[in-house]
Amino acid sequence: MKELIAYILQFGNLNQHQIDLISKKATLLALRKDEYFSEAGKIAQQVGFTLDGIVRVCYYNNKGEEITKYFIEENNLVVDLESFDNQIPSSAYVQAITDCKILLFSRKDWNELLDTIIGWDTIVHKIISKALRQKVDRRSPLVSEDATTRYLKFLEIYPNVVNRIPLSYIASYLGITQSSLSRIRKNIS
Amino acid sequence: MKELIAYILQFGNLNQHQIDLISKKATLLALRKDEYFSEAGKIAQQVGFTLDGIVRVCYYNNKGEEITKYFIEENNLVVDLESFDNQIPSSAYVQAITDCKILLFSRKDWNELLDTIIGWDTIVHKIISKALRQKVDRRSPLVSEDATTRYLKFLEIYPNVVNRIPLSYIASYLGITQSSLSRIRKNIS
DNA sequence: ATCATTTTTTGTCAAATGGCAAACGATTTC
DNA sequence: GAAATCGTTTGCCATTTGACAAAAAATGAT
Image (cartoon, rainbow over all chains, first blue to last red; front, side, top):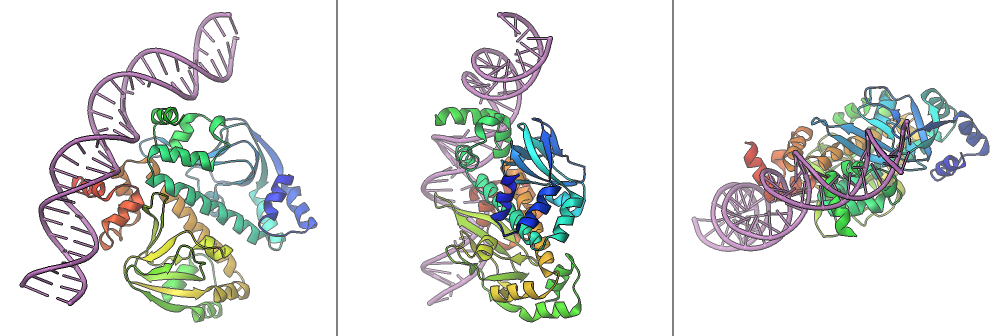
């Protein structure tokens, strides 16, 4: 829980009372490797904060290939924003790819907090817009570089992920085949 | 100006008085093809809304290649968010790539509006988070598809852009060379 | 420990794309 | 209207990556 508080306070100030209000609403969710936090077709009803483990967001393109849109490491918000905000069916799967511990807020509680705590909406907005900007900035370089450079960028961006998840997920994030990625790794070392 | 109002009202309600307050702050900026709205290294001091023309956001990677991160069409906000919000030097160029007409708000006026108009901040949050989500969603498919599919996706996403800007900008957005793109276009037709 | 399953590596070949340079076409400038 | 400039197309060849299949290695279950 202290991780969440520390994270929040990077984006704005809250007094102890406000922090308590937020803390009280959080419940702990444990997900096993491969379980879903939320699924395509369903409407997102919760916001999470990863304490432990790695989550990925993925979807299937029209050739049926699985595309990993991004990974979410420890100490970050997990939420299917479009679905959660607009209450429309999601187009992506949010999946635990290692065992995970996640702090959970129901949509109802989350909205109550937004209505109750002055300044909380501003903090949330900052958190979300930073996270989204980061996703754009991480995705962009992948388009223009060759496969080896993409992998090296991945290593820079997610240094703590490489050895904890299957190669195929990394390949599907980088837009290359898993064979190619395997060869690339051999060449690098 | 009515374009801006219509755009805003998609995201929330404002009364006539509030609309007038916003309108009064806007000034008109005309940019010629190739001129910059904001530049890398400088701190963004303005928010724009494109009435006419196409803008792109680009940067240079460490090989010195110019990468187009995205295009902004008519009737969208133009703002270098990271730089504007945090008042830090920008890492990207925001460039008019056709002659443009842009409604302009200074940072001072923009912040005054945020402080004055109840509900305006919520609307702005919605606008910005939707725009950012869109950028992520448009970038992601480009990573995993081959060059021809990328170009076809580009045509879907920006149907009104193709014939108004140089091929090289499209190539730098899709992460392929301009020669390849030229060949791809020939094959498609 | 053994077997079954999953993940990763490797081989072979074909296809896609890049690098480079030249030609071609369109547009602007004087 | 000629020259210069800019944008696009094309040719040639080298390199990268993908598709498919099989082997090897790692992991998990009994």
